Length: 154
Image (cartoon, rainbow, N blue to C red; front, side, top):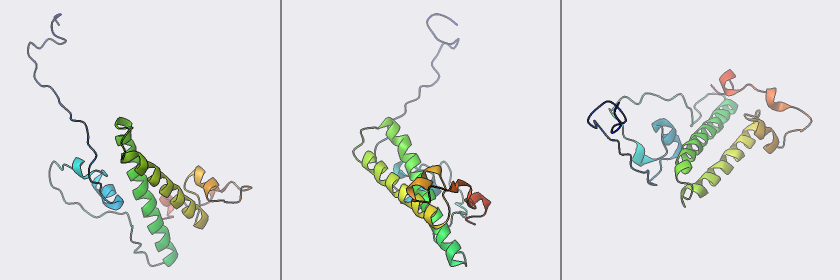
């Protein structure tokens, strides 16, 4: 290395320029989960591939009505949770966004309501939902289940 350059290359081979993300139209939450982003302007597929079929059941096609309702509710929780996570990444670099911040609070409240509903009907999915679902506070209901990965939602 020499003093003039930070590497031994005499030329600059490339420089990256990354534009700052702008707020844009949002996908609905189910589509966002399938596309991998809530922002339509960030969805630049490198190549078109078969979208395939999702295992996420947001319309409840199970035969058992109780299981059907459970799967629909779990699908809503999953979609809203993904939207919150993606929005959080955006707000980390745009904390003063007038559209993003209120949406974050709205989605967070919706998620807490859905988690509370799920906990009161089936079992808590998070430790916090044991409290928000007004479960019997003399029982530690976290171990009740089954959890989705244990067959709670198929």
